[in-house]
Image 1 (cartoon, helix red, strand yellow):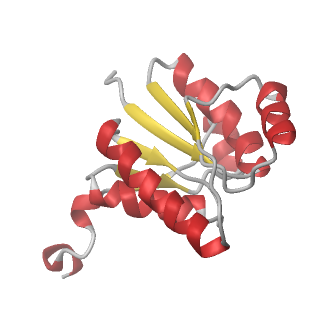
Image 2 (cartoon, rainbow, N blue to C red):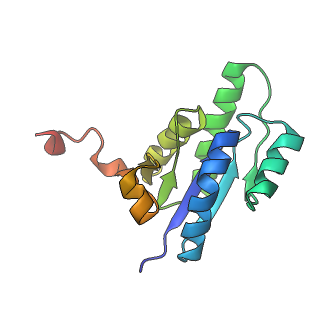
Length: 146
């Protein structure tokens, strides 16, 4: 089995709760996981209580400040910086929060596969996780569209 370098950004309480077992399973399978707490929703007491409750410690914790637009800009800039300094083979994102598309944009820029759609379907129940993967190299490629 090939060991993958995976970045898993989490920005909200539901993302932490839903992705914690996925992160644990991927680590147990021998993959190198980097969990990033993006600070999208940040309350120190709640944030770390949730992480502790699911047995997960983030490798990086960001704190965003300013208006909503400023925080989004910081999140995108931080995602670019993170993937530039901590390259990943893939980025696993979940949901419709700001964290997911902004990290996906950064992943595309740095050539990492974006895995989305962790969902509790019957197939996922049998296999553990259901993902759809999007390779950065086949986005907007006219040859692949034909």
